[in-house]
Amino acid sequence: MLSNSDLIELTEFRRQLHRRPELSGEEVETAKSIVGALEPMKPSKILTGLGGHGVAAVFDSAVDGPTVLFRAELDALPIQEISDNPWISEIPGKGHLCGHDGHMTFLLALGRMISREPVAKGRVVLMFQPAEEDGSGARAVVADPAYEEIRADWAFAIHIEPGRPFGYVSTRVGLINCASQGLEIKLTGKTAHAADPEDGVSPAGAVAKLIPALDDLGHGGKLDDDFRLVTVTHAQLGEPSFGVAPGEAVIYATLRTSRDNAMEAMDRDARDLAKAAAAEYGLEVSFDVCDAFAASINDAEATEVAVAAMDALDVENGDFGLPMRASEDFGVFGWDAKAAMLCMGPGENYAALHNPDYDFPDDLIPVGANIFERIARDILGKA
Image (tube, rainbow, N blue to C red):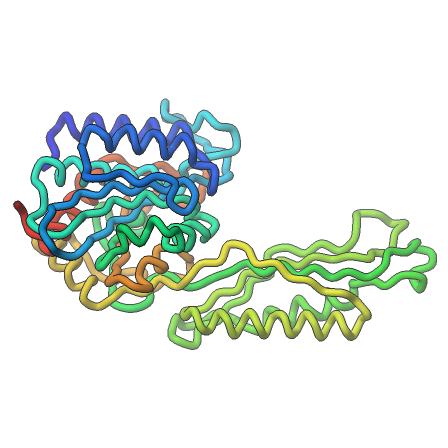
């Protein structure tokens, strides 16, 4: 159980994290702060540098049993915060505007409880992963050889999701978050004087043809196994000049599907369209992939455990607002573990994620921590 002094200290720590946000792949000081907060709990082991700047604290019962992993994220967003709070971000252009500071605090609160009353068997792993916002962190963590030492049998995460009542948790078996990836398409021809465009090779025609063709690959609709959505998010043709016929163009398209294998197929389709347009207009084409997220799929047994824990704690829960088009890289932990993502409400009219006025509601700290602890006890018992 968390005491009043625990909650005061955890709230202040969360606000300290909020003041000093770091972007994906840059979470050096955040990781150091987490290690400093974990050390007094005396976990069996603290692993650092996982998949970049990831940190994992292991609470080992020394009795054979499953490994139960709880995940939080270290990174913040490249958004200027707007707030009157005294703990507003001190880093220009960066802010914890997705709740990750609160998610980290859930895990630190859980660590305090487990350190005082150890589990009866198996291990609890508190996983503070890097680089969730660009989709690279979870993949880097599970690919890190050091992860083999803590590879999970069960994995759980909570993400704050506005639009739900305070403390209400949405979850379900199956799809929670879509797979997505950013595909950069670069078309290269030859620049010319605007008076003599025939001396160059312009990508204008290819761009005009390619944008609607990409849109036609997926229009969204019902979030079932056939869901496909393409959103063209950026296009640039040449330079802003009246005297130059363009020789280069770039298109950004975000691809979104409900299944990982469907993403592979849509990526191939998008590239084929770009290659055909490039060939038609005498252009070279190249590709780059950014922000690639796996689909987050809840395991039936893990979801059942999480729902039972919430019911025992009288936490209102259901499947409101699920599944979601938005992406989240927690799904990677579910590739070889029984995993469940829980979506917790901060209030129905609360500021939306990724908005400059968002801030994590500190009163949720004990709610999330108690859910995690109950899950851990239900699987691993109490010593």
